[in-house]
Amino acid sequence: MAKQQIVPPPVVAEALAVLGQRVRLGRQERGWSAAELAVRAGVTAPTVRAAEAGRPGTASGTLFTLAWLVGVPLFEIDDPVELARLRRTGERELALLPARVVHRQDVEPDADF
Image 1 (tube, helix red, strand yellow):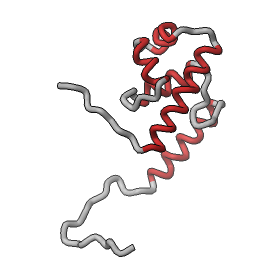
Image 2 (cartoon, one colour; image 1 turned 90 degrees about the vertical axis):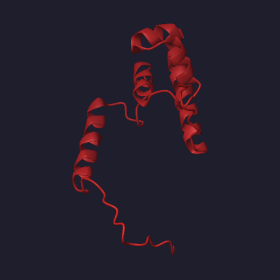
Image 3 (cartoon, helix red, strand yellow; image 1 turned 180 degrees about the vertical axis):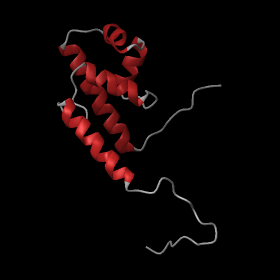
Image 4 (cartoon, one colour; image 1 turned 90 degrees about the horizontal axis):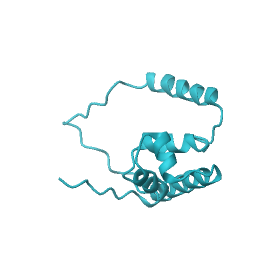
């Protein structure tokens, strides 16, 4: 079975392209080849090139790992302590929400905006 092609919205495609460019710039500033970065990340060189090209099929964890390895700040935050604080804040906010959403079948959605 062939891998499903993902077509992201334009703004997502732009974000992937920007992050891919930053990964490539960071890699080149360090004097690393795509193969060298791939070894450090535990992926293949074609995966690195796909991420740098902004292809949407690259796993988000792989993309974040590549960015981190070449010094691209994740969420524009350089400090790991600040990133952990942001994660804890998100966890607290999520804890206030219901665990799941149940859609009632007997209620018509209000489409009058």
